[in-house]
Length: 484
Image 1 (cartoon, helix red, strand yellow):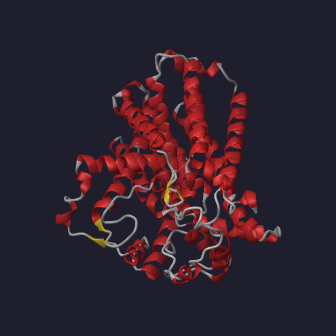
Image 2 (cartoon, rainbow, N blue to C red):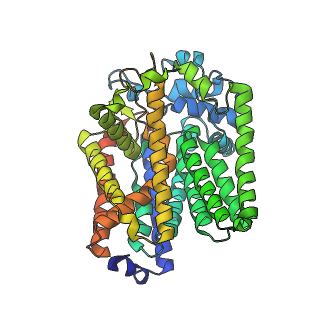
Image 3 (cartoon, rainbow, N blue to C red):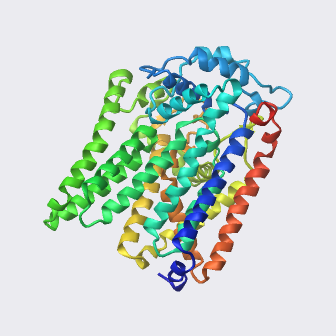
């Protein structure tokens, strides 16, 4: 640790620190509320499918096949869905003329795990109990994200405090970045919003479990529950669970060699059963009703994806410099900002995208430049675990891009055969920000905390101002909550 790091504990008391995090959590809530309200209903990122499942779960209906959208959900879609995501202003209007087409299409998200939809369904019912209806009830469902993101800010703080107990800048930078993150997935009805919360909690628990000499049964149980929640939130979290399983196995092997395995017995048993039983229950449901343990096969068949022969994998453009850059740059840009369209074009600015891409690559390069060796063992272990999760999430999307022939699918497609949806790896958001802040701290290691916080303020102001500039046309939509 450098001198700037060791000065931090005396700068703020614990009470003041908690006040700052509470303020950041409130800012995050207001931030998400404003942008949730600004975007009209039914965006281009499968919001109609996720909305339909939330409505079905509100009635206690768990789909056992890729069934059509419900009449109740279609009623809202026909009235309130805006065409502004897809068409120029002259052609766009509230209400979905293609609603009859929607009614004939199967909901391809039906096999997704149930945790988000169960919570969203309960929230939908609660809104009805309060007397909400129409467009207000739709936005009430979107506003559930406010609580998720406010909690995420606190969770980011706990994660940073676990990994960087002596570094004030790192402890505050992670929740600050979360509060101002311009990720449009947080402004939509979708199950991606729960992934960073579930795996963020699992990351904190696992980091403490891995560094504890004799982890208790309660810590093991809570860790198992958070891992199960990660699985039940989104199937794209599987690579994070694989890394977590490898980390647990590594500790078991190490303790076995040290002949201290008995110290882990009760904790590991509680972790295993609390994680495995809910996962096994959902995997069995998917196998019975969708034909495989993840339910992904039914979705792939519906979308027209087919597995390519192994000999064709190496012909994928991702193995060329241009293809690799296309995959990495788009993935980084959408990881920070999301994938919304507006008037048929991506809601983004090339200059802003490039700032996020280059900053991320430079800071990650700083992390990979050997700085781990300067940290204490517990911190180094946590950062390596975070890096492994990030690499696994990226590798998972790259593998899917390579394995499938997407045929006539719109996205991914044969012309653009890449999974570049950053929301699919939002489970790794807190591990990524821990690495990002660590790299930024090391890049500014010659400066004192005051200079580091000035850089942080400049960063969040850029995030907020660029988001306002990019999304400004949306606020004038006649179909959003402000104009209802």
